[in-house]
Length: 76
Image (cartoon, rainbow, N blue to C red; front, top):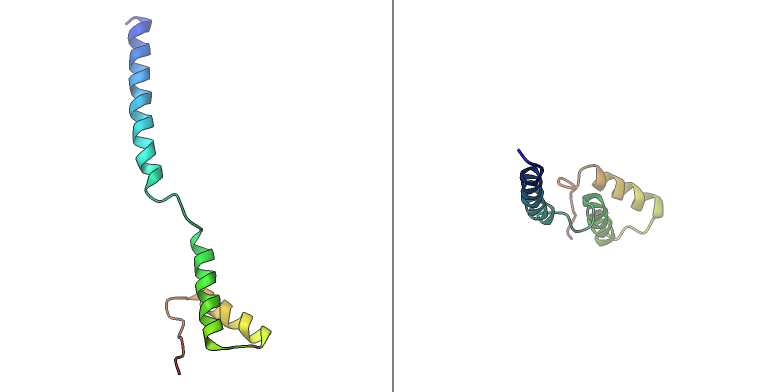
């Protein structure tokens, strides 16, 4: 094969590859990391509990960060 055929094949391959990369990157590349959202959620949960002692506050946030799904909010 001649060099021009290889060139056309290479350009075609690269354009197809570049076209498929953009949708893959657009699927979920934005937003803050999950751990920062979890930390904000846990901090907000502990603030809503009304804990004012700094050591207990940090302990409750760590407890929530360990397992935010089962962290029990207390409603009064």
